Length: 205
Length: 205
Image (cartoon, rainbow over all chains, first blue to last red; front, side, top):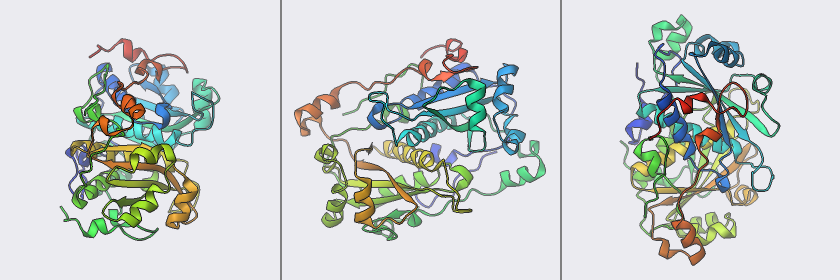
């Protein structure tokens, strides 16, 4: 199943194709491919090039580690995400490495790295689904996360499956169109709330 | 000038090419292209699909607005970024729209949207340079940002220029190779600090 963006202005194919399904196929992901996904995250931008990201990762091939990972998910997410062949948690280092001061960009930079991971996944025919619904405290405990690192998001990784594999309520959601507010609602110029005249000056797709 | 990633594992061309220069050409950016950049951000993922992002944007075609924007940059950044044809500031809505509760993923999701904007820029031959070095309070004041929105990053947008256009110290930095810690330092399995065996199981590029 694919669910392309209904974009108003042209965007690169990989960005229009990227989406976050809940239905995953059972097909495992080769280690080489997972390494390319994390390599894509590696080359992201970060404040002072601090690279404040880390990822804990578990694959279904290792049932014990995979169970530890599904154990940190909130129940609503575990219901579908436990069927993905790979689960990960992203973490942010909250203080800069060069001076120990708080890094207000740590979460931002982890999000950026995760988005580039998502683009690499899309380019390889994979899908990822980042989730806020997990227990950060359980991550800390289950993986002995040291102080100064914050669990940020859980991420299901794999190949898209069929919506029919989901419980009916989720299958219905899976088939609904993707929705986003238009850029006219969030691109402003001059003063807050003033839609940028760049948008009326541009031709729509 | 290009500065491709020296990646250990293969990544998509757009992700290897993306980088954050300081030298910008004077070439303006067409409104259509800027709209496509923000459209790419629009289709990013976010917790509860809250889309907690906004962008304030100014182009050199409007000197008054552009000056307001350069006025929020820290001096070190203003020295080079004021030569970019377009400047923006990303902002995050700190509370969910559906229930008003704090959104711990707001900054993360703005970072993700900005990374997709960067990919779209790369695909169109543009470059962006996100900056932490700006005055959030000046953004609030200059653009009448309402409570609940947090200025996150300043972003220079345009076409790459020649390093020779920069002061010598910055020109030297511009020519230095890009550096990142290897994925073996931040991809872990089982417990914190344990490099994932996925990496030794994969063939390097």
